[in-house]
Image 1 (cartoon, rainbow, N blue to C red):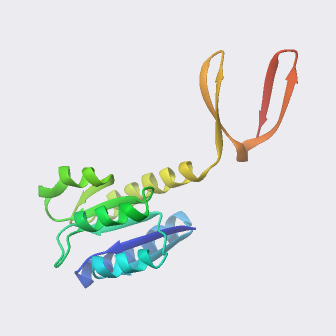
Image 2: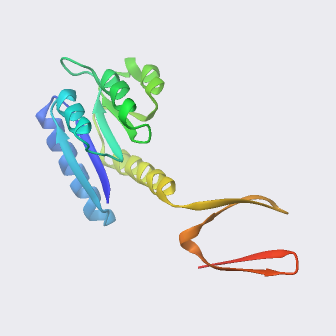
Length: 164
C-alpha cells in the first residue's frame, strides 16, 4: 500500500486532492492510503510520532512555516519520501530541488497531468521497493528483479537466470 500525505492550508485544495486521489485509486485500481494535513506543523508532528509516507504533496506558501522549510525538516526523518510541491507560484521552483523534491507542480491541478504525475511517482516508489541484483555480463550491466527470478543454473562457466 502506498501511503500518501498531503498538506495545504486551503480546505478546498484538500477536498480537491481527496477527490483526485479517489478518482485515481478507482481508475487505476491503486492501493493507496491518503492522509490530509492543514498545516506543516500537523504533518511534522505526525512524522515525529512515527508516521511514514511514500509520497508527500506539499503546498509551498502556507502561514507559519512554508512547504520548503517543512520538507527540510522532513528530510531529517526520511530521505526516501517523494516530495511533490503543489503551488500557485513558480517562484520557489529552484529552491524546492535543494530539499530533494521529486516534482514541482503549479496550480490549478488538472486531472490528466495529476494522473500522469501519480503514475510516475508510484512507479518510482515500486522500483525502489523491489529487491534486485545488478550483474555485469558480456552485454553490459543488467538489473534482475528477484521477485521475477524463478531459478538459476550454471552450465560450464555460464550462469543462466530463468525469469517469469
